[in-house]
Image 1: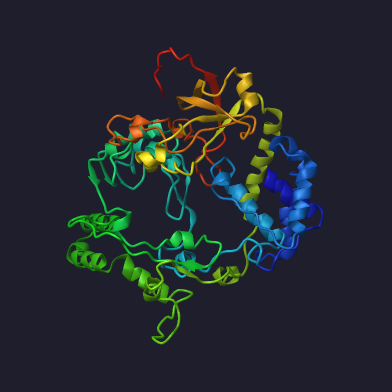
Image 2: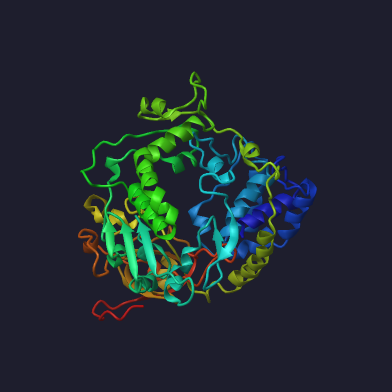
Length: 512
């Protein structure tokens, strides 16, 4: 709502100055008029009470952003994992685009990394295939796919629901979906019903305790590392390759080797030709490994020397001579080169997104009218020393004060007779947890926060340190039935909950 009001103001006050790539083939004027019309109901005055920011402040921010010599609006996880995640992400791009701040110096830009994931993915038949959306749907709830993947919110129901296509076997790799996916208790129960499960993992954790087989791998210091994803998200063009520090014990495989072996064996069971050529191909792939792919990708990437043996481009050998990495210079405009030839410009006003603005307009009025009636909204959080569940099995990362607490605004706490240290019950539609409260004015009124990755109280896991400070799982409260209407992704933030104090001597009740 806030982002929509900013873009509304830019159009209303004649501040739009989009770049040449920011409209589709329909033409610059037509697309801008389409966007302006679609956002006409989201004036700062209309959304002010819902977002908690005065209309004058929103207008001042829009004018400052549009008039600044350089500006960038940036958003990631915080705006993605809620009921309007797709719209919010799109509006970030729209704001940057209509103010001329997309793909220009000082604005929102993209690296040109040595190993260019985006360039590889966009090629027909290239690495990962073509990116697509809604080419097929989930079996039970009809949720759309993206890039070949279905929303995680559908996992439990696809395991539970009988019929053609029911999930009866599962492979997990270095993940802990029981603590990371919505309605974790439901998924926990669903995993127990699988016919077979294998986990590629170092731990017997809350998820892998259900596995028939756990296949352990090398650890981080036993394999080379090239952070392809982080170079693709960096604020400068960089490249860094780290060689392993330790030689793995004999017989211990890397995770990619295990995944490769499992894939080839599954292929061989379904294809007679694979039985003949699968073995030699698997051995060749094991021998070459990611290093061979990295060598090829660097040589023929945007900064490589290609086929020229005398060229001065970047190679793996050059990176190995610079263990602290290389600075390849500042970001440069690159979207024009990345667009499909037939597209020529960014499609800034896709119909599904424009249509979803009606749902947002309805919620604007609901939020403004029913803030008190809706109670409290639960959001997650991550701590520097507690980013993911596996970090809780390290004493050095969990020592000190309890980090699995519920953060609550002082006014909300006082209204409920709650003080810091009070034990409270937090209840949503799908579950209930008990946790201690930290009262703090860093929380907005009407919002409470639980951290991600805790909940190490399940029987059967073998995390000795984590089980001494189990905490509670925020995803025992998140609701797998609540998803973003466009993507089908879970609303991890903005979950309606009630909070009430618990008597210390009160026996624990059965939990959902």
